Length: 569
Image (cartoon, rainbow, N blue to C red; front, side, top):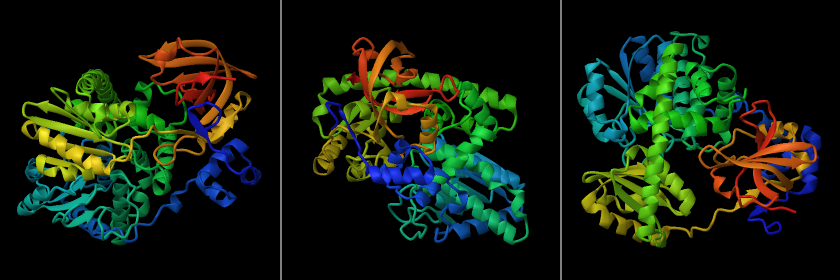
């Protein structure tokens, strides 16, 4: 711990840092961040700083990929009508949009359908009926399908082939389909389970293009797969997948496309979010684009977000993005209402005394439960299971950050559930009200033996930073370490000796500061720190990201606080 600060600071080997700085021509501060990430030589640094599509992992060993590409090639060449089914979140609609736009480029007849959150997760028999009524002979399910055994069987009975392109955990037997492309398969030799579904859909499209080219049906230049990388970036960041390896390469190039040649959907999302920067970053996806796209599926129909992503007409895209923005505003209101009610229940029932927090209420909107669970997790520092009941049936969402495998916990309590699914740190489930007490007991029993102690998450800074070192050049260098996200977190710096010239609350509860530095002034922004505005010392010390001022949009440095400021020296 440095001084009395409630955060720690890394101190990488100065010799390694200096040697790397000389070799690649970047500052010691930037190179300290690289060394902290295990990058200590020039070759690895250059590769990290310049992600290349040529370095993508080849699809060798990806189970059923060739079979899926061959069946799709048959359908295209035989002019079959192809159904595309996507999940209702951003990964699902991005995956569906990628496949549909790819098929459109091939001149195929396509019937798309997006899942409805209020009818339940996955592809059901109603979806199969939809595709049958549209005379489809082939169905491609993206970001779902792994556990949709009944739908797969029903499609077979109705003489339709099914291809599944998914990334969710595989717990039981494989669905009986023509091709089941999912790196989570135990017999899959791809060796990378970090992709969102849209990343696997990109590999699928590449394999199908290669197969059609091999058969002489198209030329390679007929379909530019790079044009879909913005969709890959959207789904990957929104699904909070690790931004390392393949994902970092794909997202880097997707962000470049968004910045320099955005499709209609992105042009309007950028405009309505009032983004002034010329460089689109992963944070724009996470905090501006994804919430608006997800709002459709949370409060209305996810197909609106899908239609936006495939829109080619500017006026149609504008109408759709305005609609999504309105839904996003409604979602924020509902979110605050449910958070307030949930926190009241947690306090009244002393739920913080439990191993995990299980809180339920009548009428809590199921469309915001996942967001509320994440917000409660941040505040309570324990795994959270939140349930909104509509009559006797409750929709639930669970969130954690590594203390407990949520999917395993639900498996342990599965006999009390109607259905469930998800990952280690995010899961969803359905439970009847009569089973709620037993479900709670089963969860607490499982958590007692399996939940790690919920210690406070420690903030770790990459380096000490003097106020005089916060420059536009440094911000540009730090930006090259991105895209930032899971497993490639944005560098945090410990900055001391900042005098407050102005302080105010902006938005609902955000802190905005103007700080004095040796070369002038710098702005600082503290998300959800507005209540601190009257309690700050005139001289402060902060843990913060060094970023470009989003509002000014000209590269001016700004500090984004990641913890409340403390008195400085």
